[in-house]
View 1 (cartoon, helix red, strand yellow):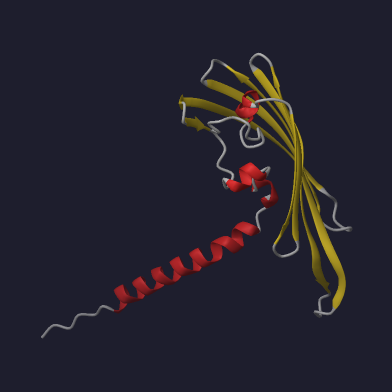
View 2: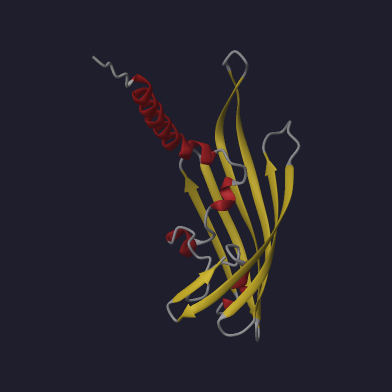
Length: 192
């Protein structure tokens, strides 16, 4: 008679299933821990309404914050202000000024501020000490140019600043971006 032993295979399946559940369950929490998470929110009401999916904006007017190649597609000068109160005592505000530079270019500049208030400070024994808050800023500048009626490109500059606590030196970083946009048809565009 033959005895088959399936325990290692069953254990491997159980381990794999447990890891998938843990990774899927942990992903949203881990994502919220990333530095500069506030800057990944969309800029402005239109962009928030579309989930930030405006990298290739077909109709024009989306923020060049998402893709500097969108700067020449601005229909005219505009000033955009937005403010949001989010869950867990978070806030998000932004201001942007954008303008086309006729005949083929455009420019935009703005500030995004993300903050958290009402953080419960505790000492090593778990006793309340003080209420803390944080502030993070992203300052951006974008310039774009149309190569022809369907293709545009641009460059962006971002300065990030994180003011975390009184006893912590603010962190600063600089980001550079390059963007392209190609209008494939009247209703479709590609961007990146």
